[in-house]
Image (cartoon, rainbow, N blue to C red):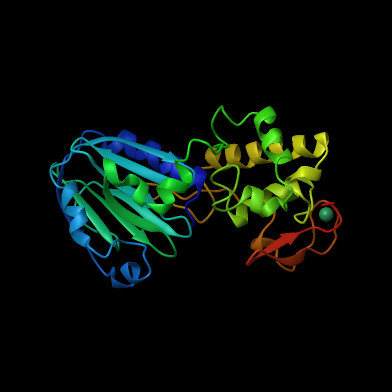
Length: 279
Ligand SMILES: [Zn+2]
């Protein structure tokens, strides 16, 4: 149910198609005390008042974060990266569970629910930098792997600058690119046949090529297959992409070589790999 770069992009494109031009009539927030306590929603829920009467201008995404922009200077920032559901409903019958519900003047509505760590924020154009996830993923100095800027030349140059293990170069707030989570990292490294403990600056040209290809492949496939297999899009349609490596391969054997899949502890998380194929 995680919503990462491909899933956020699918949702933003669907929102752009369905919601552009709709005016907000009202909103409701529900069961969000826990989310507020851990900073996933603002302590002051009156910030959502600014959405009322606003008309949706656009929905865009970068990395794992969706920005819905309104014509009155308001923005809805949605980053359900570790788990969440965003649905469009044509009427108020059978409304799914939500933390935020936005009703439009034409009777349709949008619901947002976080099922794990993530962010729901309403922010004015001038306050966007206050959002940690917006600042992290809309940072233009970081490469976005589904954009044209993600060329092999640029990527390979950034890798060469980092004498650190690949995980910290590809995942997290100091990464050279946006949208790669720990689970995507495992999928990518297995497809690139590279061991996760390798250092970025030590990869040879061929390995850098494999890594760049694997990143492009994983994101393109996830977009083509409507997201990961647990994901549901704006209309409730399920995705069908299954990662080649990750927790789903626990206690399995490698489909390429038959070796037992191993689990490593790395940077506050686990990484699954094939010790034979990944060197
Ligand atoms: Zn293998």
